[in-house]
Image (cartoon, rainbow, N blue to C red; front, side, top):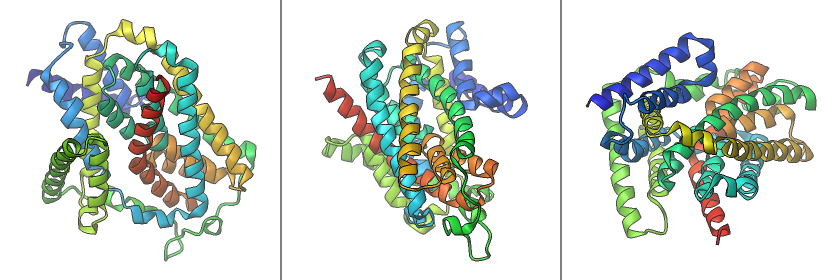
Length: 374
């Protein structure tokens, strides 16, 4: 309980620092939590191993995945439109190619777990950080390598946001308006409120009780199915079950799932930092950074190069790229910053699609990379 208390305090501190200080806001609460966990562990104030870490790295992450995926409405993809869906698909394929290329170029330098990173980078640059955590748990990535990869991911995600903000200016910006994609709501305004309504509604204890019941049930069933049909890992069974449940309107409208799921992920990341040895992170850090950089670079070349060849405007490509790399929140942030009001709802839709498919893509790429090793 003392370790759980310290981890909870780390997450609270990281969130307060992110809220109040620009430097920590740039790093993000996830990375700050990891760094605080590393600091306390490597100075002897936290143990390097604990059953608490084990629970968060297994059951905790799985529950987080289920809770987040219970919010994904596959039917909302209709609002994305063919251009945004096409851009997102190009970006996802380019990410997979980039992860494999990164594995080929620096895999030997990273070490025997490089194939796991190929899967994690493919997953996180298809749909965001939730996929990174889920795949890290499923593939049993070592804490040192995981932490180094998170640091590289945070740095490059920030750089890529700046690149996507600049790209429409360099490549030519299409006019803003609902006619560009045709997703205006019935009252003529962009459907931002409709897309984010559930996340803004007050939390209800009955909703939380239902969500926890569903998440635990999905996790239990996924574990049984993984035993009966071991060809698929538990994380893919869990993703499938949660996504199927999410298509039931009464379940999808329950509030609090994303909030609770993201909190569990922050606890997991703090615990992961506590298990990391700083010397080992510095040893693998440069190679891991180049691994992530190659993945992002190929993604960028693919989505903007191929996307422009197919006649997709630069604004749509930029929003779709942020949906790939950072998830729905990043897509909304970029669309808002550039004034693409008509692309907010499509960006949210394909960002949720990234949540849904990232684990499948990452697991596929990880196994392709492992097979490559022979």
